Amino acid sequence: MDIHLGDISHIIQLSIAPVFLLTGVGTKLAVLTNRLARIIDRSRVLEDRLGAAGGAGFAEAHSELLTLYRRAHLINRAITLSTCCGLLVCVVIAALFIGDALDLALAKFIALCFVAGMLSLIGSFVYLLREIFVATQTLSRRNLPSVPK
View 1 (cartoon, rainbow, N blue to C red):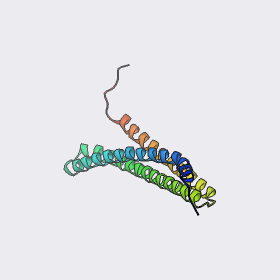
View 2: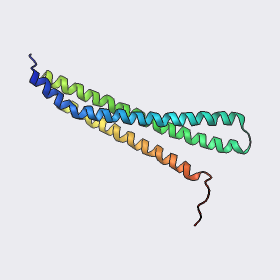
View 3: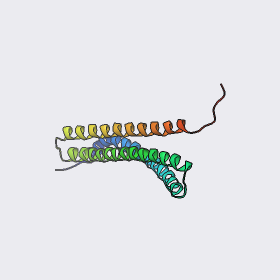
View 4: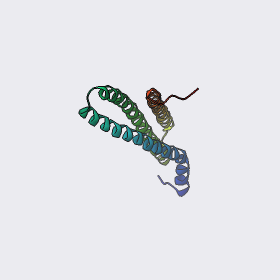
């Protein structure tokens, strides 16, 4: 079985769109890990404060810490789903190359992996949105100065 230069360029053309998608997923993973790092940093500060505090500061710090744990859990799920999406997109790219190079009928497998990847990406965005809602809900509950009417 000979693979010609024209065949390889056709295979590369087929894989361009999934590669761009993979770049976007990588960028999203960077955003998610940044959010998780900030949550972890804040949690460490609060854990230290809980160890040294007593009385009134304890309840507030404990409440914020519980919220941060919830946010971290949501971001972890978003990271997991984004990573699954990235892996599935890699499988799609590999299957495109293998299927076209070896003349295998992998269209249904490729479509299944692509749809599974998109569902993973959608789920990741849903968890990110939930985490953002939890974060902004916490912000609105803090003791902010009242705005005159």
